[in-house]
Length: 170
Image 1 (spheres, one colour):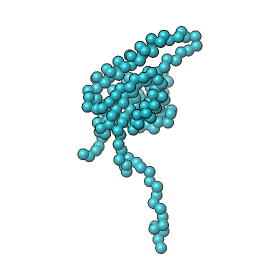
Image 2 (cartoon, rainbow, N blue to C red):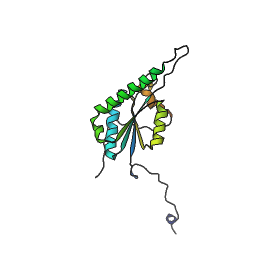
Image 3 (spheres, rainbow, N blue to C red):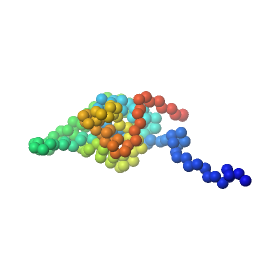
């Protein structure tokens, strides 16, 4: 009698090679850094391939004051929020490819990691696309790198996309 008949099959976890991947909703973390244009182009390519909805999300980070600093006037918060909404509207207007993609812009006053986490949960996001200039040593000196750094610190798995090639059959 052969042992092969009594052996159980090895446990196999799903992978991209064996599982159909479907992204219905993407969250694109926008920080207006130097990589924003490329991040948006990448997200547009993915959204078009999967016919996915895109959420363009920007967090207006809370102002942190040092000791002895003057209180920040309440108007400053509203001005910062409105300025960020204007920048987001300009970004969307410049990216013509967004016209053919269902998308929403979300600009809120919050810490980036909190806003992204909340939207991922509430909106049932399948994929988060965020950009970084790649040099993690600069994160502490560049506010634009903070959201990406915070996502990495919270345990987000990352992948470097330096070239996009989408293959699918129709």
